[in-house]
Length: 498
Ligand SMILES: *Cc1c(COP(=O)(O)O)cnc(C)c1O
Image (cartoon, rainbow, N blue to C red; front, side, top):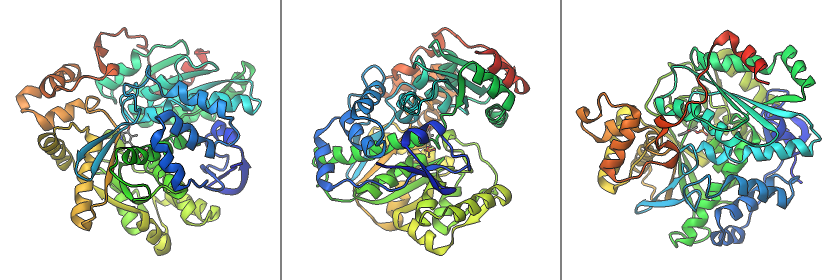
């Protein structure tokens, strides 16, 4: 039985169902397992003969010990199947060149890796509510800068016992992202543009979450708020699976022998994806290094090199917008583990981050981080150049986020000379960020003045890659959610929608 505690209160002791239901601890900390289950090399080798869903059930049951096997397979099979994912393998591995592989995590309905977690989270949540005797229906509130909103909508659409309301900044998301959201079907979904930027939308949602009057009114209607953001344990745990899956696939393809170490390169924002890999290593997955790749917002590069986390810098809008982040929330889980579960120390660092904008973990923990992680960053010019070079040399299309990772990998090899087999974690389809991808590949006059929808066709025609189902004919779909609200009216909008 694995129980969960908070990074800001190690005395807490709750089941995984409770941790998933609560999302964040009352102390503001994040839930982590009290111990990390171990998996043997024989078990890992035997995963090479399993399909993705079998691998997922095998890994998940080590962490979600209060879920039955039946419940877990129900969740897994509802999340990862042919009607949701365009690849049989769910998270296929592609050979890029010698020693370098790409794991494509974008075959889900929204064409970005958030589907890997958000397709399964709603099913965990519904089961967790039942297990903990909770009778209310859940309302998921999301403020999104693009990718998360659509992935959450796809995950929660028509899931019984849940409703979802998404707010996006009216002029702050790409055309494709906006159309993905406003054409969303499902009888339990609502989508609103907000007159303001992402921060306004997020502030509005945070206020609603703590509005006592609204919460009590909802209680009378048997409704309860919950969140689907990336600090929920239910979003982190499904991401551990694909690190094992990548390794098992390399064994199956006879690229590595069981026990041989590999590297992973992860384009990183909130530190959720790469942290899941770190947990896989702690469980026994043979990993040499995790290479943490950042864009111009390179807070993590500096932190991993020095132990000093310092968000006091300009926020830069880049061509890899899903990594434009200055506070990587999931890092709290890593420093908690490396400090020996020192909840007081972690609380102190997080207080310093909020009040002063920085903290320093000191030489001992910094040294431990460097044993498992290497970090680098790619500026926008380098990122676009990487898209061009990889297409020329390997005939493979990278999206802007994955290109950051490939560029940082090149820097890693130049700096360290390490030729360990390496898997680059690819987080988005090149079609999703097609404007930048087209600019990287084609002459200016071919791209200039074209809408993102026209560019989908251009990219497909010139490369022979097909447009993913989820992005096809988006501009011809019926707009189902055309409401826009003032930022001060968000609460009213929520109140009126049930
Ligand atoms: C969210 C996202 C990331 C960053 O992942 P984290 O888990 O926040 O580090 C990278 N690439 C894409 C395309 C994303 O949507």
